[in-house]
Length: 308
Image 1 (tube, rainbow, N blue to C red):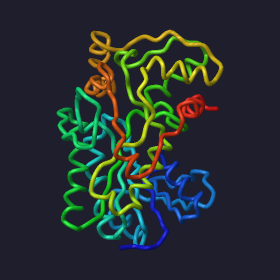
Image 2 (cartoon, one colour):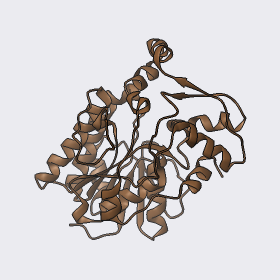
Image 3 (tube, helix red, strand yellow):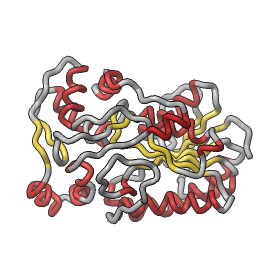
Image 4 (tube, rainbow, N blue to C red):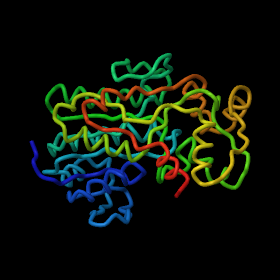
């Protein structure tokens, strides 16, 4: 077991940047690995240009590290089937070879459609290709963990809000237009309860789970605020910026079908529309109890999402 305080973060998207910043703030040695090696601007963090599908190179960087964090986000949904398998296999191999704990940023896609609040004991029963893919990536890591080849853990959050989420968030992508008073479009029904997860809370949970040996070998749900509707979430973000509510058009039904016929990304999103057609609620009680974490207060989340 490694005892150094060196942490390797693969990926510099919203989760990766927050993981790196939190670790650097506490005084840990942090190396952020991306294909371009771009500087995140976080003081004290080392940045390396490296293709994360090169397991040997990644293992050498992570050799002796305490944790290897999988915070990668390999492009558009339309590319997932091609890009995720070799990338995930390389990260898992690098964690095995280096001895680092393998901490994975997961999501809720593996569960598929649900009819009750999601707990970690739900089966990974998705049938759409993105959910099946993410379920298989965790199953591979879990099998390696159970075989004693690696120490793995995965954290799963709902739709991201907060700083730096940008166009990848269902709420944050419409915020710029809404701040200008424009009518916006949102997926599915906008008046059913939905859990939103602050991206910094994802990072906090990932770090906490990785450093707790008894938390490894399973998934954890990121502590998140009580569910609100998409309409309420956007209204609250606008209120935090001193702006009034805006008109929202729902993308669903025949409109979504028509868009999916001509726009590949909308075709991918249609497979996930169940998340926005019925209540989509995360039960985070296990992580709160084990890891001692609480979500960032909702009013602060809204200010962050508004860019304040």
